[in-house]
Image (cartoon, rainbow over all chains, first blue to last red; front, top):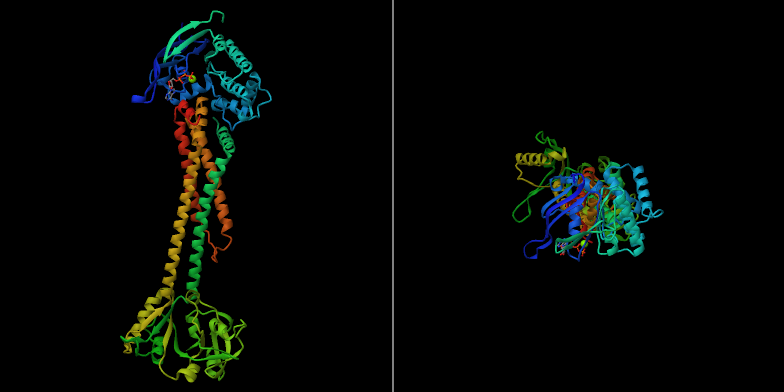
Length: 235
Length: 396
Ligand SMILES: Nc1ncnc2c1ncn2[C@@H]1O[C@H](COP(=O)(O)OP(=O)(O)OP(=O)(O)O)[C@@H](O)[C@H]1O
Ligand SMILES: [Mg+2]
């Protein structure tokens, strides 16, 4: 396995919150190698450290100790500007709570990552429209997020995550607030992205979501307890 | 992120947070507007007081006879004193000189009577005191030569004799049993405005008439003289003292309109200071208001900053956006405040016409815009340096 094949490497990653008596150890020495193009599910009980792990993978948070490598680059060595541009162009993050900007329309929300990537206005609108079409939201471009249902908001968030064609899709319980129909739609999109070569990492507590992944890691008390492969899934 | 996108993002965000935007603008508007208006009212008051002082006769000096310890006149002033004051080559700073005699008498018009003070003097007195007429004319040297008694009266006497408010000019009144033609009425002076008019009013007549009819040919009550310019009042006083001393007179007691000017100036200055303090306070209140609004919404903004950071916003773009937003709002608020103040100052405030001055506009607008930018930007820039996850947790 070459460096290029290895998308993400975590070594002895710890993440502690707070200090002294009240210190919580959310990640207690995690080692993880994610090959390029893998579809990985992260499961485990509440408080196991799943979100803490994904936030570090998505460069939204820094480990207290240990190292994170993305595409062969040690993230802690990179300047803030460079990390921002990795978040912008290489990572698409989907949050459980959507995290749309409520004052902006669906289209403007989807345009945001391209605004920060310096894409021109016309191209931006075309691509945002296309992304919204891809998640089945054609005709909802001008709606604000508070005029959309939870499932629709999550689709906007997915459109926003994929619009810069990132190599990594990181999703923290993306279907936690969705019904089975909407869940199916979002998972189908992830399948398509994975089929297109993207590395997909999804946190979930739903078996049908975990069943889509090639590999499942089970976390408990800040550690990876075990991991297994889903035999049925190929590619 | 292109500059155009940056502006678009700022405008969108301002529209999205409309209440916050309007409140911030309002705070800056109130701060700037009230400072400019209050300072303008202060300027207006100053100008009004200066005009009143100028109307006093900028350089009138009264020479009063020296008095002894008991306050009675020890050495009276004479016509000869007046003549030397007018003609002595030492008096380079002395302009006009007018002798004055004072008498009291009754005056009546029809069945109405009053007890005015009668002042006998020469026409120069009106120039020295910079007197203004509300009707008619002053008396002249030729009036003094005729047998017809004439008088210029003040509005106090006019009111006393003609309570119906009609003009006394052209009417013949009886003063000290002598029919006297009223030829002019004096406009009220700043002294009258400040201290109220003498209760019975005053009648001004040629000095020879007053001496012939009322006081007799005795000593002078006082001598009025003018300095050649407002700057030479002190010089004129000391020259007058020197001239009189050379004639063996003890130093007389001087009084001049400068004293009143100082009193008025002091009052006006304390009023101006008061207005400036109020203006400073309103600027401060405006600043605190802006800060408050910004802090109230910072939780919301912090979450938005977290989202934008998670999407890959460069710290500089984020900071730029918030600086632009705060600057835009502050400038709009400042401009509206200036406009509001310019409109408000078109109207008199408690009788004072406000005068706007340009440095105040610049200062007030500058300070409030600076406060707006600082307090609008500071929390956002601080949040922009936060870890995206930490920012996302705020207000979530
Ligand atoms: N910002 C924080 N400050 C303090 N403690 C935190 C913080 N974030 C997480 N924790 C703690 O770290 C531990 C792991 O949290 P994390 O959110 O990673 O769990 P999780 O596996 O995602 O749980 P869930 O399934 O409920 O989302 C928990 O004990 C949590 O209380
Ligand atoms: Mg979680």
